[in-house]
Image: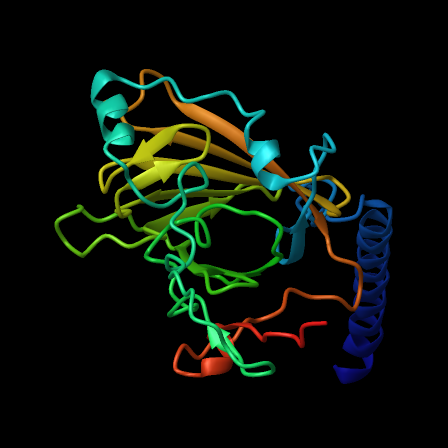
Length: 285
């Protein structure tokens, strides 16, 4: 019995082996000819290119050669305010480029000082009085952007930083936490690499090009990288029906810093007299 079955089993196995081998070879050829990024089901199509990123170090540029950042912002379209918005701006709000707080006010000192002995003309040089210019707006200092899975961090060369939540949370009600100069920011990254950031819960103050903000005001910033990732536009759009007759929009331009360069971290100790030292009287001749 075994002598009769053996050649039958052997022949059947041989035919099955040939059939399986042919099927495997055909499948391999199909996969080899499929476009990059296409699976065996053929449903995904070609792989998408990696979009440019806003992560890294950036420095602001002057595209019209104005010669100063204040002159550049004067070319922006002025905000169109409601009567309430006009009253707020005239009340002397602080913060923003339009009426920034800057450092502490200079003191008047008419007392003669010995040659070579330094003295101070202002106090607390690390304090910027809560103004928003160093955390919401930009001038000549560079900034560094770090993007993670759930958060982004913007750190400027001076003492301003912002935390942007990317996990889908909403902006909390203004009554939940005290307003801050940089507000509360949430964002998302679009397929083309644009980072969209919405911010609220800001301290009251003026805004670039004649605007104003309160804790209820919202600003949307669109960080738009160029296709090659070497240039960046930041478009601001401020909205608040109590303050603006229509959204107030302007934009800044940036270049990616050269390889090997980076935005510096500024350390400041306001208790160190050297940070406030402004004048060292020279010898008079």
